[in-house]
Length: 249
Image 1 (cartoon, rainbow, N blue to C red):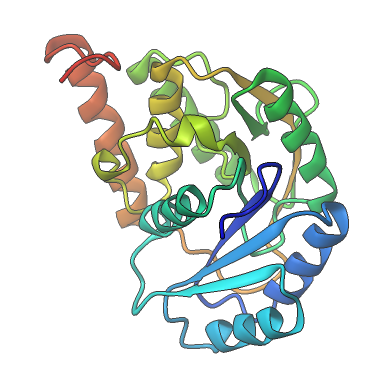
Image 2 (image 1 turned 60 degrees about the vertical axis):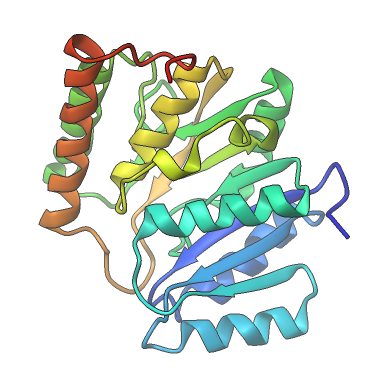
């Protein structure tokens, strides 16, 4: 049987998050007790998948989706989106499993998405947004990447790369999930832009982003280049290719 119509699904992609996952799950379920959690584990060699199974056995609000290997953040979220739509969830949340997104801010995102009937993005680069623990070069990379994406894609959003989001499932259902091809963090830019193009109401909610509390960052040069290439490729098509509106074939 599908989930109740008011249900919230929080998707947590994991790869070697053994040290942070239990705390993140506990905190988000305290913040939003009615939420369900889907852990999408990519065969973590550190035992995160088995740990997630134990969390699921102890709390029926937790479900685990095991994938055979490291398929990337984008494909993990697409798997989570497909699960949410198949099970009838009304609100879907993207959230990191490393502790960088504060669970106490989650209700703000959910309420904002419900209020506008679309999506809410937890934004760092808006008034009231903050980053704690990042060195200056990390801030520069993130801000520069966001500016390039905004210009290339003619987007009105200020934090396209943010991975803390709440999205009404009715808008997810309108996305062509098979056409989203970014495997890494560029998926956040791609999916936000596609929702924006579809006409989804999107509000940016200021958040405090905290440098991960444990484990190692998954960011690599390859992931950065993939994101940049996909942004420039879509920006080129937007200007010189076939019409890219939601009605285009």
